[in-house]
Each structure stands twice: as structure tokens, then as C-alpha cells.
Length: 213
Image 1 (cartoon, rainbow, N blue to C red):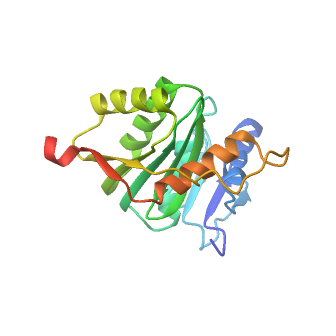
Image 2 (tube, rainbow, N blue to C red; image 1 turned 90 degrees about the vertical axis):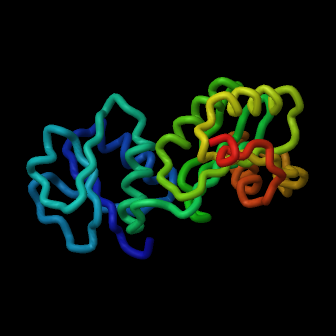
Image 3 (tube, rainbow, N blue to C red; image 1 turned 180 degrees about the vertical axis):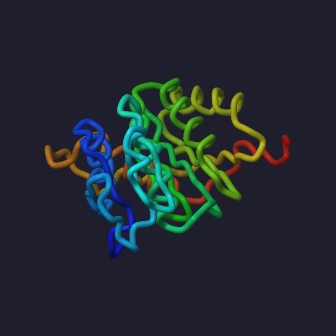
């Protein structure tokens, strides 16, 4: 975004730290404002706490619970700030392996990147992403490597996917290149970027939810 459209409006140190850390992790710009201070006209969404929301005058206010993961709230703020109430297409890219890289794209824009330690954690993350996503089309694209882990992932996903979700197998050859073994690249970043590349490739149908609906 060329100018800040998201504001963090709180005096809670813990809430501020958690929210700002997530915004910075995604490379999003924002304004820091004290509750009760005027909200600039360009701000489309304000993130605050339950005890401070009544002091804020903004058309869109999101309330953060300090005990929760801020990622879902930031996703919602990003969607509001971009002027989208619903995406045309949400794609979840998955790089399977001993660890699973998972990336979510909304109309081609990266919304979230996570890493799962095992199959069940990956399924849980993907299921949550799919349930939260508001889109006309929802697609899960899975890299065709990693053998047993991939098979287990597809089996579990096939059992729980709602009828409007498609699942595709994607050729993942080259999605982890041109990375080199270096301390400059953390493993989770490599997995996340691979998942993004997988999400951008067309694949072969594994499951058509529309046909099963």
C-alpha cells in the first residue's frame, strides 16, 4: 500500500507488540495512534483492544484479544484495507515434506505463510485457512513430492474438504530453486516461498468438490 490504511490504536504494550510484529512480518505499513486521538481520513481500519474500542472513531474497528494469534485479525484488516469484502480466488499452496510450507494467496496477493511440523498440523492450518477465506473459488495446490507425507495429507484433506474446494497436484520441480544452503535463508522462509511458487502453478485435479456437492 502506498499510504497507511491500517492503524494500531492501543496503549496495551502486549497487544501493540503482537499486532505490530505480525504487520511487520508481512511487510505492511501502518500508523500507531493513541486511543482518543483523531483518526486520519486515509485510515480504513483500526485495530484495538476491547477496553479501548469505545474511544475510537473509525468506520471499521477490529478488536484484538491479547491471548490469540494476531494473524487472522491482520488478514481481515488487510482485506478491509484493500477494499475487498470477498476475493475472486483464494489458493492455498502446499510444499509437502518433513515440514510443510503453506502459503495463502488472495487474487494473486500473498496473504499468509506458515510452516507445519507434521501432517495433522498442516491439515489443521489448511482447514482453518479455507474456513476463513471468503472467495468465489477456493483451490488447494499440493506439490507432487514427499511421497508418504503427501499421500497422508491428501487422504486427510479429502475427508474434510467442503464441497466448494478444489484440490490439485502440482509439479514442484524447481520450486525450491535457486536457493543455496546458507545461513541467510531460514528453512521456514524457503518452505514458504516454495509454497507460493506451487500455488502459482496450474495442476492436475485430485478432487473436485463441485462434483461431490
